[in-house]
Amino acid sequence: MSGLSAEVPDLVCARCDKPLEMRKVEASYLGQTFPVELPCCPSCGFVYVSEELASGRMLKVEQALEDK
Ligand SMILES: [Zn+2]
Image (tube, rainbow, N blue to C red; front, side, top):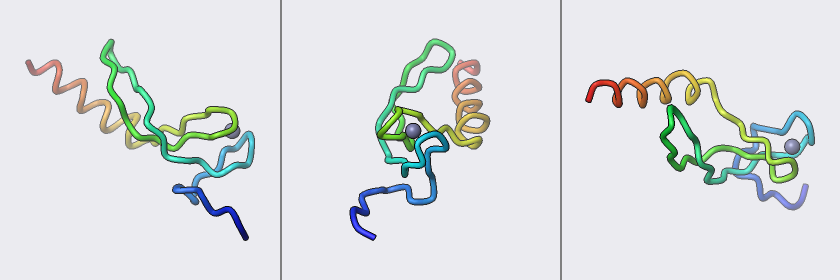
């Protein structure tokens, strides 16, 4: 095997069958935009959002904002 450049070897794009790479993307939630590092497909631009991020971390962001 050559060309091992993937930083996220466990994750593969279902569409392209290519390994996802960690990239900084902008996530938006409730009108707020913030940079996050997520595994992205270098071919089609698919961004993998884990359930942990989608349901856990995002929810904390929402709660933190509402507490103020
Ligand atoms: Zn892809």
